[in-house]
Length: 103
Image 1 (cartoon, rainbow, N blue to C red):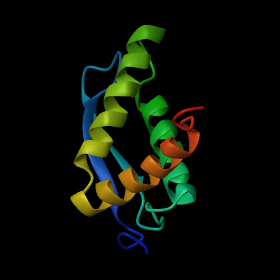
Image 2: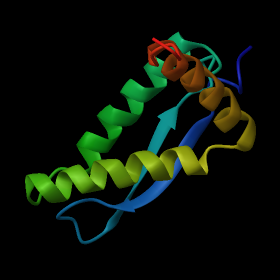
Image 3: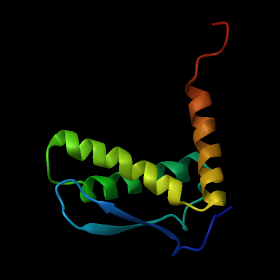
């Protein structure tokens, strides 16, 4: 089930590492089914690419912190249904990686 129309995007205002002014990011996800592992993986790649691009400048540590902060902010600003679909697909991935209880 597609979450929203193809034009749906998350807009985030941030201060990029080493930048004095804020920039707007738009990460499209309306073309993805965030409830599936494949859709969530594609979204994760888009978020990572946009975050790395926005967080250029400054030291490697500042850029790393910026990327982590930006990823969290992007996910927090998603509408609740998109967050839920994404979380369910991620929970399935994480539980698939977890070792079985009792060995």
